[in-house]
Image (tube, rainbow, N blue to C red; front, side, top):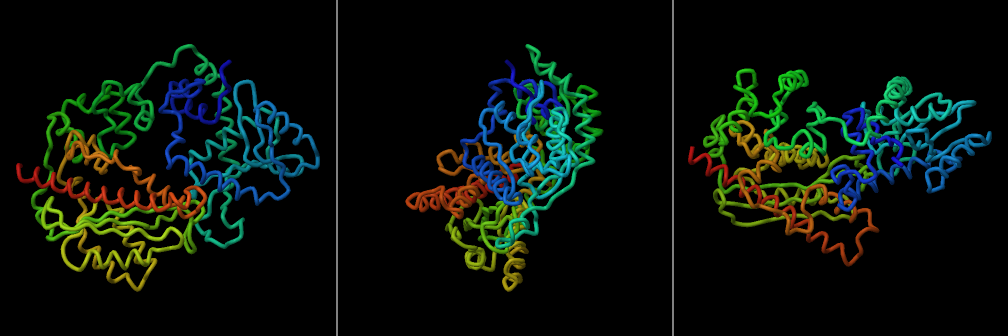
Length: 490
């Protein structure tokens, strides 16, 4: 028997019927299954659980639904609803003929109930309102009389040591969630029928495809450069392009209707060659040697790791610096990993100023590194002047790439994840224990929180963090060298 619609499968169906059909399968495609095996995904799940655990402290007289089997949980929930002395129910379970949902908290308000959903997020979005609305729709269908609905978001004003309730910023979404719940109720029958069909709905290229995990095996199959690779496409422009059946960049007969960067991307893809759109050589020649290549690793957690940090505030814990006499000519490598037991950002900033010296360019990739330097200046005002002079030496390779170069291998983007493999094929992180920034952040957070890595394992994790960040700056050196080679031959 096909499982009832969950919040995820229902909302996927609202976005795209075909995506909803695959989401409802007993064994959905791997692209739709959360990679709980990765350290970053595991930490994200643990953070959500931590926030939920803290939220429970707001309801001291609550009763938790403990039954594991879903039908049994629904029976236990109904029993609690029927008891006049029940004040608050946590993890309440409900099921209808075709949907099922759990409510984080239901609080009795006279003869009605107020729904609370807890999210490890700091700002209200339409997506979060839709998640509440689905739960409200199921509760309405199950006969629960709701008086309102609220989201318990993480407060950006919270700091370590504050009372438990200060961690949360309630957002009343009663009106918005009620409106969407009514709209969703009108879609349930059709969505249930579509997702129960023996075959998935016909694939159709729509704007949602650009962020769908199934895109490459669905409407994007066989399209090397989908229309979504055009940068800065406004919603109306995208709708017009799709309406004209322009599914791939190569479907466009010319670039007369495209913006400047879009036109450069179109030319590079249609010719299959790199296209210079600015003074690449001149901008690269402006580098003052010897130069330093700089990369930071940062972490931000829902429950701050150290005092005076806001939830999700990104603070640097590691940097790598490579000193070169010229493109690809490496001289020395320097790095600093802060203590995971306390806020070590001051030591990091002081060492950084020493390691970068006072002369030569400091080469980075993306303005994120600039934001980290500004954060350090705010955190340690007495170092602000020195850090400000350092910002004046920065050379951002991503800004140069965005302004001066388009390449078919960039797929319309300029992030290092797309530019590096296009210009430095074969460069890899696969031999490292930590292969990406999210895993690096999760590793440091787990070290700080304790309890995940053993005492014997912790030094090895710190070693792996050094190795990962060092590979990042090596990538910068190789990428800069590749850019210089392109500039010389144009």
